[in-house]
Length: 38
Image (cartoon, rainbow, N blue to C red; front, side, top):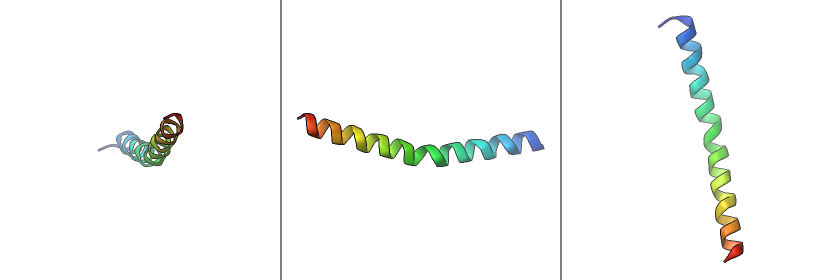
């Protein structure tokens, strides 16, 4: 694995790591809004 591939994998890893809490909070907000609408 050369340097560019390593940077890409690291970027992908951090992107997934940072997007998980974002998705969880988004799902939480959607559930909250749906609960308020019902």
